[in-house]
Length: 102
View (cartoon, rainbow, N blue to C red):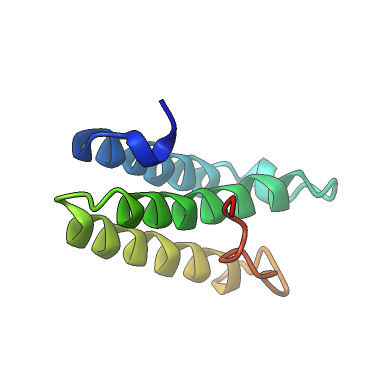
C-alpha cells in the first residue's frame, strides 16, 4: 500500500514512529556526536519523511489532516530545537521539505 493510500489511522501510526525516532535520536548522545554523516542521514530522514507524510495525507484527503499538521509542526519544531539547542549538534539544516516523489 503506498503512503497516499493509507487509512487515516495508518498516517497517525507512521507519525508516531517518526516522533519516536526523533526521541530516540535525541536520547542517543553517541549518535549525535558521530562525524560520519550518519547523524545527518537519520535526522534529515525523519524530517523528510514527516514532510512526505503531510503531502500524502493531504493528497489522500485524510480525515485527520489537521491533527497530522499540528503534530508534524511540533515534530519539526522539536527537531530544530535539538539541532540548534545546547549542545548544538548541527551548524545548519539543509532543505528537507522538497523531497517527496513527484
